[in-house]
Length: 222
Length: 113
Image (cartoon, rainbow over all chains, first blue to last red; front, side, top):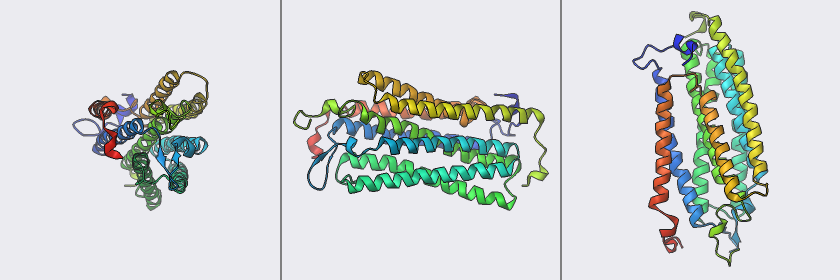
């Protein structure tokens, strides 16, 4: 721990603000939640590597649906929103409320862009025949990425509330900085979950002609 | 709670914040470069196992970089790190347990047909 952190030690038995400690414990529990969803998706991808059957009865591969350009753009947007969130937290610690507002507005816009990309992706997949009901792949994919999207939406809502709350003059000092820091922890968590999803769900599908799960495909499907 | 009632940040504190600000910029650039490298990597003519291993390491590197710097774990109390690590270990244990309990080779997929 740095000297600066020690100088701002909270008057609690652990020396950590309760809000921050509770948020970290929540994030640890959320790790298990996403761990289960990602495990389930990977397991069923291994079991059903052939993808899904569309409305016309054609066998489709998920590689036909994925757009690496769109997903890469979403990933970049979310990473940069995390950077802006770190700057917003830093600005609040320095008492620079205008800088905080600028940065948090950037995070909100980037978060909305990410959500827009996800809505576009889901709509595109649905029209191509991948629904939450017609295949195990659809169920696990939509539940996993949809749960992450819900987390992003909650984060955006939280930051919008913080942004408008900052105009009341009540968001200041150590407690205000702590509130922003706790919101920032949540936002960064959403980012790190996407880092894993980007690799485990999207990128691995591009390894080899049928994705990393392609070795399990029956010869007739290949 | 207005900021006007709070003590002004000390010089040492502001200097530390400036130092962190530079760390954040470097980290953001680094994350963008690694993400770009990941996308290039999947098109390289390398064995799948090699690419998969490198992708996993890159992803883990990005994950820990964000939690250590952006989430301030490197500057904060160690207790927070251990709290989060406990959740992370349990998540990986869940992953391992799911894979072992429902081994793909032992599941009768006719149930899902």
